Length: 265
Image (cartoon, rainbow, N blue to C red; front, side, top):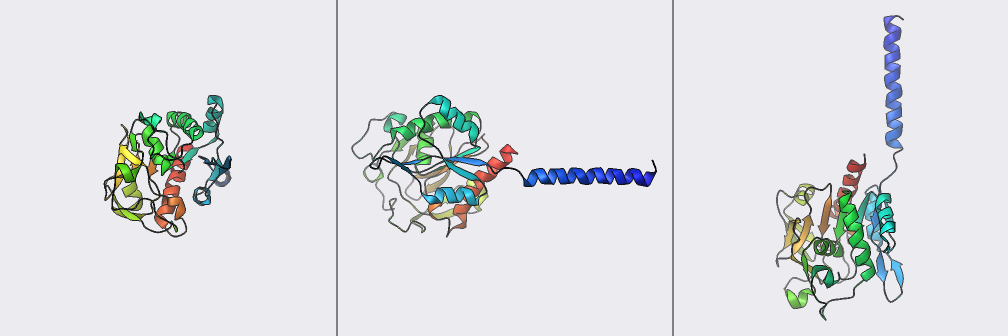
């Protein structure tokens, strides 16, 4: 075979390989993010805030609302199906989870969510599945990993800063200070962030292993992460409520999906 023909065949083989790799890359399935369900006790019904789903979709993943499973085998299958997880807001976390008795000021609980999330979190961490927690998601993560919560901020941590704002929720209720040299600082490239706020519980003592990324002026933990994992972040504010007006909110969902894509590919 002449030199020119050999070179042509090498180039053709390289081109075919390029087309194959390109086809594989462009036909890759989108990652699946399991979204913790919201539950209406009065209506005995699942429900969902669209911002959670829209944030995941716009970041390039497929959100699926998980059932309130209690069986360990079912939860194990959910963990296998999903590439990452979004721990949403919702009812208060049961005080028994962090070793306290229920106080009259504690709000409505959802035992079925606590059951699902405890087992799912354990399995997801074991497999290093990326996780983003929002509001209750931060509180649950902290409690499940050994921290404690204020059951009711107005009575246990009174402050001039309002943490239970009224609609619209796509505006600033207060600011948080972002600690330098943290993943959140690297993502947003700022040290102060205006956030919305709609909660009456919060982190009291930080769980062993979690690292604080942001704090409010009235000394509440506002964001955390778990070092040594692909992506385990949680924030106290609600980025899903300000997707349309705030780029930093969109970045939170993008960070989750980007971490999932990097891990799965």
